[in-house]
Structures are given as C-alpha cells and as structure tokens.
Image (cartoon, rainbow, N blue to C red; front, top):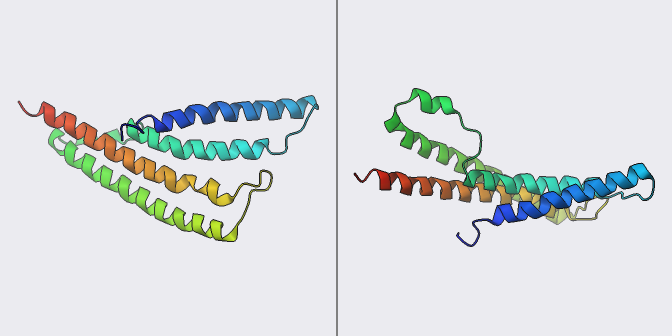
Length: 158
C-alpha cells in the first residue's frame, strides 16, 4: 500500500489542471470565434466524474468526509471505538453495494458497446469510475481505521 499511498493525489494533480486547460481553451475559442472545440464540455464532464470518484478515496484516507459529530458528543468516550467500527462497517457495506451494482452497469454498457457522442469514448470506461472509486474508498477507509487503531493501542499501553 505504501507504493500507492499518494496515488489519488498524483492522479488528481494531473486531472484538475488538464480539465482547467480544456475548459479555458474551449471557452476562449467559443467566445473569440477563432476556433470551435465541440468536445471540450464532454471531456471536462468526464474528467470531473473521474476526479470525484478518485477524490473519495483520497478523502477517506485522510478521514475528510462528512462526519456526524453529535454522535461522538453525546456518547461516552469508551463507546467511541465501537462507534468507529460500526461506521466503518456501514461505509464498507455501502461501498460494496454500490461497487457491485455499478459493475453490473459497466458490464451492460460494455456489452452494448455504447460510446460518448463527441469523443467516441466507450461509456463503460467512463462509468468504471464508480466501482473504482468505491473500491478506493473502502480500501482507504480500512487503511485509515487500522492506522488509527495502531496509534490508539500504542497510547493505551501505559
């Protein structure tokens, strides 16, 4: 996992500037009247989709997703470890469910050989972002959980 520790950040650091450049050049060309790029909106949309689903893995690794703090505020400290386990199980169940259902969708799109209108990209490649993102989030959630578990057990030794 160490080899892939910065995987999401590296991919996102390429995709974001690429999307900005594509949108900038497409907008500049459209409003200046010098050239027209019919595909730029579609490319930006698909890059954004991939950025979102890759970003959920990066967010899970840093525990940056939305958290209901009220649960931790109203429960005793000794229950927090159990609550974290329950939350992890819910996250894993959700990601597994979405990944399985989206794999079915991707298989169907692959069999239909559907392509995007402007770029001609296979739609299964675009929709593959969903199961990949869910698997990344599940893996990074486990990584974060076991990382914090190690830290808390080191502190509890005394």
